[in-house]
Image 1 (cartoon, rainbow, N blue to C red):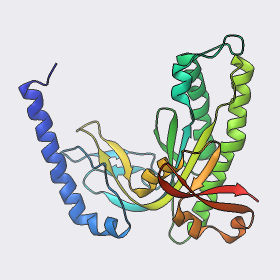
Image 2 (tube, helix red, strand yellow):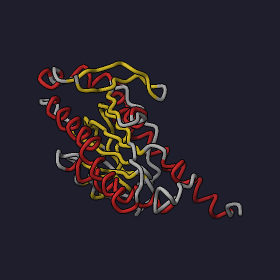
Image 3 (cartoon, rainbow, N blue to C red):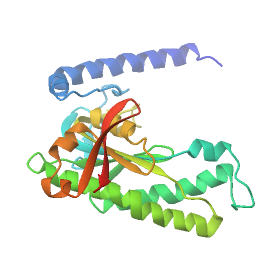
Length: 260
């Protein structure tokens, strides 16, 4: 059923007020974002009512709707491979005890909380669950960028190896499920911290290149990809143990990180 006249009017109002606010935000912060090559593709749908909302965004426990902030973050996205195939293609009862939706439900129920806990060990804050994956943010202190890189990579490697192994072992033990695979992407940029959504239901959100490219770079199969900025800032002591292979993924240039 189509929107009623009243509903259309409400949508029109929120579009207009959202653009009004987006213009104000851009006027105050746009130059800084452009300089940092930020793609602010997801501005808030909100009106002028003042709200302050609690958040899990690192170093931003409260986000003020009237005062967006710009900060440096490393975004880490973990994405489970082939979850759609798991959902649509039955697995033989001879090899597994669960299939289809039940399989995916169990896989994500095990994987996502395990990943979140793993990331928290190194100060990574999960701000969004993305169906079969998640977005985590690491705050970057400009006086010690290398420390943020260390923490983010350590978290990524722990998720890829230890956490995935723990999850896979439990899934096999309980349901005879084959191992699941994940991809991890890391990207660093300045980003905008602000509220999005309708009045009374606004959500804290980070908008920036780091989130966009981390999602793109998470397309590997049991691999970790980083962007060019992280590669250039990589700590010397850590870099001596690793190999960085330039490799496009999902139409995005990145570096595959592997052990030497």
